[in-house]
Length: 241
Image (tube, rainbow, N blue to C red; front, side, top):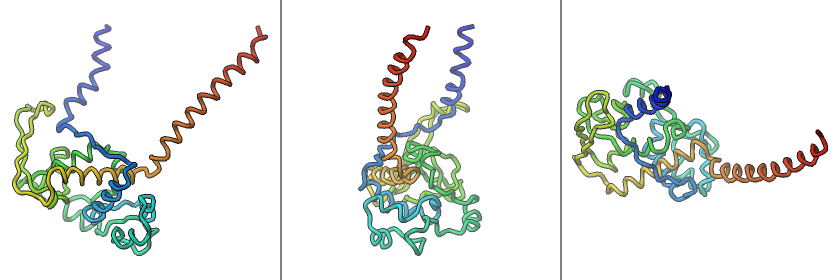
C-alpha cells in the first residue's frame, strides 16, 4: 500500500519529465542591472516591437531605467506620438495572422507566463527548417510560427536530433551545426538575449525589485509582533484555568 501511494505521488513528476523535451538553460538575468535593462529595451524596440506590443507597459515607464524623456523619444519610441502611450506594435493583426497563421501575442507578461529560463533558451535555439512556412523552427517550441527575428545577430544554424524513441524526448541528443555566421559571436549573442530577457522580466513586473525587499521587511516586523502578541497572550491567560 505504501509503495502504491508513493507511485501515485511520483507519477505526475514522471510524466512531466517524459514531456520535457529540449533542456532549458538558466537565464542569468538581473533586474537590478540598469545597463542590461537599457540594452534589452533597445533590442526589444528594434527587433521585437514591430510585431509584439506591450499594452501594459508605457514608454514613460522606461524612466525607471534611468532614461530621460529625450533619450526615450529619440532612441526607443517608434510606435507612439506621446511618451505616456503604451508600447503598441506597428503591425496590423489581420495582416500578421494572414502571414504567420496567428497574430503575434502581446509580450507584457510573457516572462511571468513562460519563465525567464524558457525565454532565454527559446531565443537561442532557432534553426533553419525548409519544411516550415517561415523557413525556421525552434528546439523549445516545435513548429513555431515566428521566424527568427535575431538571425542576423546569431547567424543561421541547423539542428540534428539523435536517439529518443517516441515518448522518450528526454533522451534525445541535439547536435548544432553552423550554416552562416551572424554579426555577433556566440558569447555576444548570449549577452544580447540575456539583456532582452532581463527587460521582459522587468516589464512583466516593474515593481518586483522594490516589492521583494519590502516583503522581507514586512515579514520581519510581523515576526517581531508575533513574539509580543504571544507574550501578551500568556500574560493575559496566566490566571485563567
